[in-house]
Structure formats: structure tokens, C-alpha cells
Amino acid sequence: MAAEQSMQTPATAPGDTRIHNIGYRSYDGPRLGRGYARLSLYSQSLRGSYGLGRSVKSKVLPMLLFVVMCVPAAIMVAVAVATKANDLPVDYTRYAIVMQAVISLYVASQAPTSVSRDLRFKTVPLYFSRPIETADYVRAKYAALASALFILTAAPLLVLYVGALLAKLDFTDQTKGFAQGLVSVALLSLLFAGIGLVIASVTPRRGFGIAAVIAVLTISYGAVSTLQAIADVQGNGDAGTWIGLFSPITLIDGVQSAFLGASSAFPGGVGPDNAEGVVFVLFTLGLIAASYGLLVRRYKKVGL
Amino acid sequence: MIATESLSKRFPRVTALDRLSVDVGPGVTGLVGANGAGKSTLIKILLGLSPATEGRAEVLGLDVVTKGPAIRERVGYMPEHDCLPPDVSATEFVVHMARMSGLPPTAARERTADTLRHVGLYEERYRPIGGYSTGMKQRVKLAQALVHDPQLVFLDEPTNGLDPVGRDEMLGLIRRIHTDFGISVLVTSHLLGELERTCDHVVVIDGGKLLRSSSTTDFTQTTTTLAIEVTDTDEHPDGTRAVREALHARGVSVTDGSGLPGAGHVLLLTAQGEETYDLVRDVIADLGLGLVRMEQRRHHISEVFTDSDDQRDEQRKEAVGHGS
Image (cartoon, rainbow over the protein chains, first blue to last red):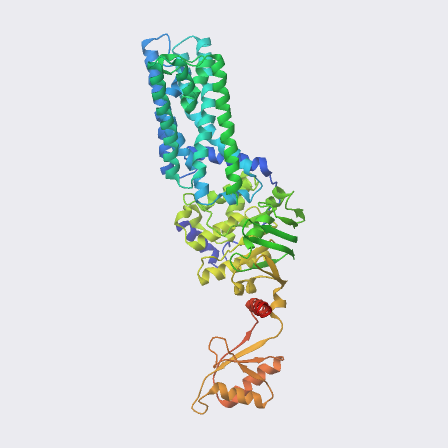
């Protein structure tokens, strides 16, 4: 306000410098079109997933979860360095499985923030009155949340890796483990982002979205791990393996224990073998594709 | 600017547009119709967002079916409903929307500052939109439609929810979009008086059909009617009547403004030219009355609707007559 007045005062004083109304200027510069618009939406959504460019209040939760994700890794590294251990206390591939509650919370909080807000405040028609198409919107939002999740899950792995190198652990071993971990969390990010967005895009109410995503992720995991335990006790390990298909986290667990050299978190520690692993991989990719398809279908209707 | 040819849009239960053929040139064009007349549906088809059931349409010479993205790059759209997230500032929101229209980051920021200033948002543009008044929100909505300097903007009910002052400001702004910014405008409203003041051309649709399309002057120029109101004095307890008789004696036919506010106190007469004004002045001065007002009264576009309603009533009566 003060700045406004001090700017206006010389403008009204006669004989002094004046601020001229330069009138409307038209724009002749470049228009970068659809691809650029999609990229802009991607970067805006990705930043938004960590509360950047939004209110202070909306930065708290994602930043907090990010810290919670990284602190255990830092502690493990500190312990490994201090005790001159031969290996890290946790495998790279196992880390995300252990921290799944944090990841689920992050998806539950940020998927609705990403899409429910646009639905609730009816901003979607503004996007579709611009060069982008339905598929561009879905791709940008999906890629943004998947990237945000990848940052969340890969950062602690990076901490572990750097720490392991500082502790002078075997380089080849660590690099291989790190790479396997990255592939695993990339797959996990795509899967969780897809499931989270599909659920969140159904409701314009953020609260419902959060509750629904948490419910789907935790109930499916709870049910699957209970059934797996029962199957294990009854000596029916095969059935236990197949049950693993029905919750996102056990699905990722199955994929990585079959192909990424991870030790399975399934009861009994026996994951799917290679043949069964193929089914797990196909199932995962199928779910990711289905999420994308459902989102595109959803926004075909919402666009108007 | 816009051309449609027997454009129809049918939903399972309703026909929103029924073989609508209309041509819209540059300038400010009003699209008038009651709620549900098909105004918003037409805009969605023109943006290439909703396919027409039959017929074709062109915007800026581009076919809406095949050239949707190219059209949307060159037009702006201000929706009827609320569309603003409350937790970001107007600046951030409009910058984002500018980038969504393909403007590079620096240009997006410059154009946002310019556009917000032109629509009349100043220091408040850095505050979250959630705290804005309805009038300010409408300005932000308008700014996001103009930020990429389109050749044409679609404004869907821009005066919705505004108080009379806000309406006047918004209408003035719409006028400036064309005169100062050189951007053509298609503005919808169900209030005819508003568009009469703002538009060069008015298209009236009803039930998805074209009722009338002509320039605003055509609508209202037929005659110039003068409305006169005078005071009463002791000498002439009914001043209005005295004036009517005096004018009648001079050969000017006068009607009382029946059906208008203040009927009985308002006299209407057809102005033939400058002389009529002088005559009225002299007559009233001679009678020693006070002239409360003398104003030009233009025909209102609403009469278009009344006419068509009458016609429809007649048709209905005929139909009933045939039926019995």
C-alpha cells in the first residue's frame, strides 16, 4: 500500500515525472503449443506435490514425510560407518517395503491434492479450453505424481548408497543393489501414483480422496498379508504367493524378489520364482496401464 | 469470426441446439437466451470440446472438429461457473494459465502483470484468491481468458452475481476488450438490457433455435421516443394532462406510457427532429410547469422476446383451435 502511494504521488504532482498508461500491448511472441503446455502442467504439479508454489501449510506434510523417509536411511548409514559393518542393515530393495506406511501416507495426501482440487474448484474446463487434450492432462498429472513418489523413494536409497561408499563397502555390490533398488522404486512409484490418482479423480472432496486411498492401500495390504500368513501356517506356500498379487506393495515385493535379487518379505521368506514372477510383472504393468486408461476415460467425461 | 451451419446438438433427452446457422463478425457480439437456451453448449462446440450431432462450425476460419487445438490457442474462454483455486494468488494462477496457453515463462509473467492491471486488479493480486470478492474473482476469470492475447474471447455470463456497479464496470471492460485491446468478443447473457449497451451485434437463441441475429442499432433504431415527465402546479393540478392537451392542440400525438414504470405521469411522443424538443420545451414553459425529465427512450431488445412469445401463444391457440 505504501509503495502504491509513493508511486502515485509523483504521478499527480504537476511538472514532475509522470507514469503514463501505456495501454494495451498485444503479444506477438512465440506460442509454444501443446507439448510445452503439458510440460508446464507437469512441472507445476510436481512442484505442487511438495507444496512448492503453494501455501506454507501445504508444504508441511510432504516435506515432513520426505524427512521421515530419509532419516532412517541416514541413521543406518551412520551406524554402518561407526561400526565398520560389512553390509548395510537393510537392502536397497527392502527399504521401500519397510517404509510403505510413509509412502502410502504420501500418496494418500498428494494424489487428491493433485487432481481433486482441479475437480472441486472446476479448474479442469480451463485446462481443456487451452491447446492440451484430455490425454495430455492425464499424462502430465500421472507423470508428476509418479516423479514425486520416485523422489520420495529414491532419495533415501541415494543416502544409503553414498553412505555405503563412504563406509568403503564393496563398490560393485553396492552399485548393483542401488540400481536394483531404483528399478524397484520406479515401478512402485508408477503403480502407487496410478492407483492413487484413479481413486482421487473420482471425488472432488479431498478428505474422501485421502481416506479412500489410505483405505485401499492399507486394507489390501492387511488382508493379503493376513491371508499369506494363514496360507504359510497351513503349509500352502503356493497359494500364499498368488495371494500376493492382490495388494500393491506385495506385488512390488513379488516382482523384485523374482527379478531384482531382493529377499522377499512374504511369510516364510519365499517369494515367487521366475515363472511366477513373470505373472507378477505382467500384473503390475497391467495395473499401471489400467490406471492410465481409467484416468483418460474419467477425464473424457469431466472435461465438459 | 464464427460461422455455424445447421449445427445441432442432441442429448438423449433434450435437444440443446437445433439446426443453428449463424454468422458472427468482428466486434462485440451478444448471445442472448434464457437459461437452457443452448448458449453454453454452443460455446463448448465452438471450442472443439464437445462434438456436434450434425452440422458444422468454424471459428477464425478453422473447423472445430479437426482444428480444435489450433482454435483453443487463439481464443480465450471465461466459464460461467467458479473456476479458481482459493489457495493461490491471482498472479500465480494467471501465470500458470498463460503457460498452459503456450506462452514462454518470461512472457507469461509480463502478460499476467499487464492483463491483471487492465482488468483492474492491483496490489490484491498477490493475495490468495480465496479472500477475493465476487467482482474481483470475475476479473481474475476474465484475466485468464485474455492473458494469451487471443483474437476472440468467449465470455459465458460474465456479469453473473455482480451488483449493479460491478455489472457496469464489467460491461465497460468488455467494451474495452474490443475497442482498446482489439479482441473480438462473444458474450452470453440472459439480461438483454446489458447486451444492448455493450454489443455491436446481438444473436438471440431460444430452445436451441436462432430467433434473430442483427446489429444492435437495427434492434433499437426504428424510432426515437421521447419520454417526458412534468410537475403539477396550483394552476394545473394535473400537469401531465395539461401538457398532453397543449401538445395535442399543436398537432403532436402523445401517448401515456402505459406498462412502463410511472405510467400516468410519463408521456411518450415520437420525436420528428430538433423541432420537437423545442416545441416540448416551449409548451411546458408556457404552462409554467417544471420539467422533471425529458429522455430518449430506445426500444428494448426484450421486445424481441415479447414478440416471439406472442407469436408462440398465437400458434398455440391455433393449435388448440385445430384440435377442438
